[in-house]
Amino acid sequence: MNKKESKEKIKREIPNYLPFDYEAVEAHLEKMAAKGWRLVNAGTNVWKYRQAEPARVKYAVTYAPEASVYDSEPTESQKTLADFCARGGWVKVSDWAQVQIFCSEEENPVPIETDEEIRLEVIKSAMKKNFIPSNVVLVIILAFNLWRVATGFFYNPLPCLSSWLMLLSLTFAVVAFMLVAADLAGYFIWVRKSERSIEEGGTCCGVKILRTLNRWCLVFAVIYLLLYVVSALQEGQSDMAKYMVFFLLGFVCLVAALDKTREFMKSKGASRSGSRTVVIVVDVIMAFVLVFGVRYFVFSGDDSGDAVDPYAPEIQSTFIAESISGQCADPKFSYEISEVKCEALADWCKRKAIEAEESDWRWIRERENPQQWGADRVFEGGWYDDIDGEKEYGKTDVVILIRDNSIIRVWSIKGLTEAETGQVMSILEGVAGIS
Image 1 (cartoon, helix red, strand yellow):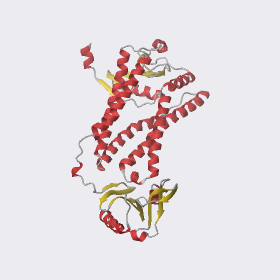
Image 2: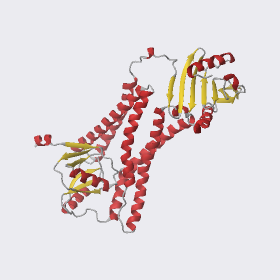
Image 3: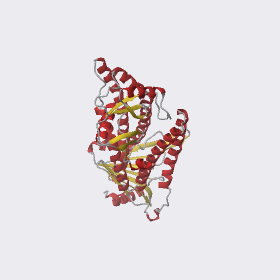
């Protein structure tokens, strides 16, 4: 028995199906059986197949709303459902949370679902158990992340527009939110369309568009990972590339560990609440270890920065904008020179660069002598001084120069004297060919 099992060829795959898309699951499993692969276990994150003779096998998907991935034994309603299906020639294969999967090798087995209205109601009850709550939480988290990234972008867009790494982060925040929101919204649209179809004597509708969108999620994730790593390496941020790779590997290990924990608790006959508690505790501990462990492993190495020139300019460039940033020792100042390559965004970027330096605590005003700096417009800014409860302009610690589509920002904690102005421009001319 053990030798036979050891010789069996096993195939595993990551399921990429929406749980209410029963037609796609049935079609996929029938196609796999025709190729000689029979489903053994539909795990939460991984499906397991064993090799068998290619055959025409019919699969049917139904739902058990009260079922849970934390149950050690089938519920009474699951047992009743399995007995009912067995009388019609259907054999229980596995369950995927509330999704119940049956198969039959009969030519024309009796359909499990014969009333479309009941089928839809059962699906709706099942989706309320897991799919809807988990996706609502995910949408909220992604919406917060999108708000955080977008706020930083609209506050000061130039760093983002000139860095592939930051552009990818912004793109990911937008696309990830849209994909998850589309799944959630698509489900409610599907329910409404199916209700109308059933009222007219039809069946539940298909979800072809959502199915295609869901398949592209995996493609998007792989492409994003590759582009992120390449962009990080290109911009000299190898630590970020390593962090992404190790974090992803750690996340895969975390998911596998949670699956193993669930299986272990089931094998011990643990109750639903007990199994859930253990899995949550393991999840929290491993997530903590993952986040801080990977960060420590990647960023806590010996810093060999002695050979790096701290005053060498850093260049970041995309098809939208290019940015050169650096610092100088004498006179002491830091700078950022940005060129907006996209004409349509030039005026907006200029305005945002000026607004980014202005707040309730900082002042910004335009100088009257832009020619001294060889610019079209010059702005200066600094912190307010609080004198007897009144705000007054303090010393200048930032100067912003606008020249064509170029935005030059110079920061100096001690401020720049008039005598240092020419010296600063001479240095910048050497860095970026400014004249």
